[in-house]
Image 1 (tube, rainbow, N blue to C red):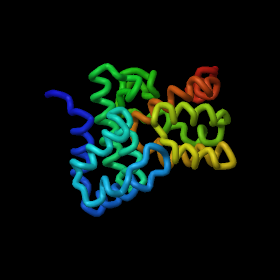
Image 2 (cartoon, rainbow, N blue to C red):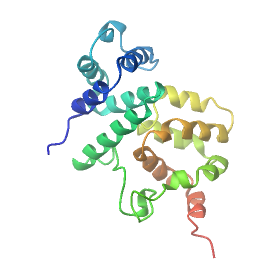
Image 3 (tube, one colour):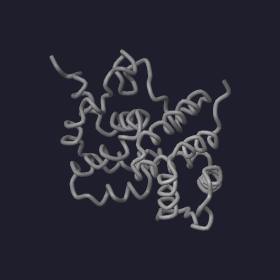
Image 4 (cartoon, one colour):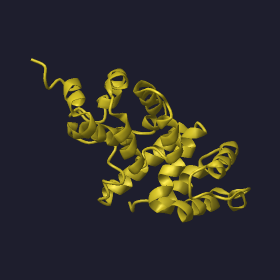
Length: 208
């Protein structure tokens, strides 16, 4: 089967929304504060196909999926957001673009999975409390998550404004890291670079 285009993935996702949620999606899209902005007259009363065209023309194919997923999470369409990100990750993986969206489940432990595969609990979920309490080098982690579009500008600013590392980690877990396994995989790789000793400790590498 030929892989779906980004437009097809977005259109299918928006088509599945109820009219109420689609209306919420339109308003949230217009309310975004970061550039590029979308004017109300481009989306008001428009169907899912027009919204798809607006997303791709405004944010490019590479940027449209993260923006759409972020808005879906903000309007409590979490399942739709996760499905969109996962399908996009699979398509990107099949085309070789693993830097843009990593495969959501691998065979080895290198992406935070145990070698048992998808049924194993992700490293990020397994050690959630420890990560919240012990991650201290949060600023460069947030910077990389923003660069890789796991979080967007508005969420980034909101998290950065919190006063403690624990508060920032809790907010990260309650928002962006709920989106999909792909986001957790990317977060795990960033953790290994910025909190290497903590990751090693949690993995038990220094246990006798």
